[in-house]
Length: 195
Image (cartoon, rainbow, N blue to C red; front, side):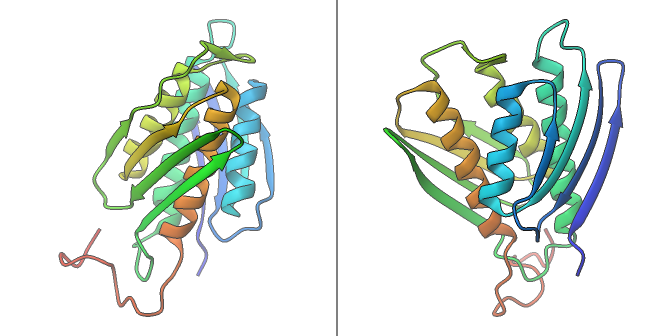
């Protein structure tokens, strides 16, 4: 079964090409023009064992908003496409992940219903060239495009870099669990018979 997706999205604000393989080895090739965001996406790919290629040309002369939000839209679309009919997958995933002094919880459900919830408040406004408020915008966009429930809880806060990195890595591990197969599951894991 080929669980890959390639999405191209062009607007007046961003031009994005993204390739995702849910059954990869954690290999990434990423250039969004925002260094810290590239670092976060590389961590997502590596720790989720997803192969991920991302090329973004965005209106960074304005700010980083459209580049990051639109990449979230495209990544969410790729997750949804690559997951296919979701037959045989665990559907749910969660991870409590330590990142030095930080402890973050991520839980998700590939339910076909979008919902995003987060209590994360960053102690700084920017990390490198990335506004920290864009972490929420990114994951919100992913959750709605992928049609998943996505929840974050910052159990112990600390350094802003560690908080963001913990969120991206926890999301990677939770998603890896959710898209993994369980031989006991016949069809989709739902009483409705569809997700």
